[in-house]
Length: 162
Image (cartoon, rainbow, N blue to C red):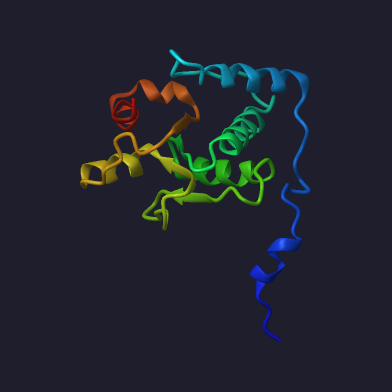
């Protein structure tokens, strides 16, 4: 018996059953990072100790951003492929079923423009060097482990976006 999984889409809840509520300090972090979107501002930074839920904060922030800006294109940059894949999976529980995610690393590329792209800076840089028109292609760029962003090679995709 062949079952078409898309036929069940309407029966699925919008939110994941694994979605977790934020702790108070995480909610404050999301609110503060949302302030970085105010006119005249363009950058924000979240700093939390290991294990306090930076991924929860960023995935909630992205989900909220996409709820208000449904056609926005979001890029999440990391410095290694394993981290790209881990971030992608970790964000799913906070995203609604309408938020699509794509991996862009190790030769794997997004099939289409919509959704959140989780990528290494190397993949983005390579695409730009090969003529991919990515300057200002994203409405929101999130950098994991932002201490890497100071390096010239990592910052190339960021400068092109700025």
